[in-house]
Image (cartoon, rainbow, N blue to C red; front, side):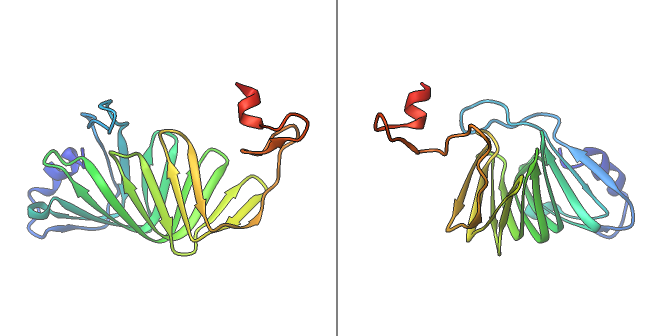
Length: 185
């Protein structure tokens, strides 16, 4: 939940904005994803949090950055605007400024990212750059599916390094005329 603890602490405050302290929040009751399974908990850490209760919206800023964590994926940015359900769970979030999405040894940098909790996807725009080990792609848009650990890089330009023994997706076996993926089945 977006800060049941923080909400109770802030309920006594007269202004709708809280500054100067670090608040960590998480969803305790998981929402259901598109497949009807519980979606993983989301944890958020920010220095400044403004609750807009009537709009079910939370605006967070960090000094230096806001951090959103879902399982093993971490999204950081200067400002995060989250739309919450009635229970305070993040359903959708927009990240602005110095955005970085990290998962394992892969990361994407950009200026704007959109997080959709139900779909389990993060869309990066604003000069996104995908880093995967030594591979670097400058793209128009990067869509990271957290459920399948799949990345779609649109209009990518850069250098991709193939690991020893790794077949590129869709690569043809010249001897048999089959896709590398079909041979692996």
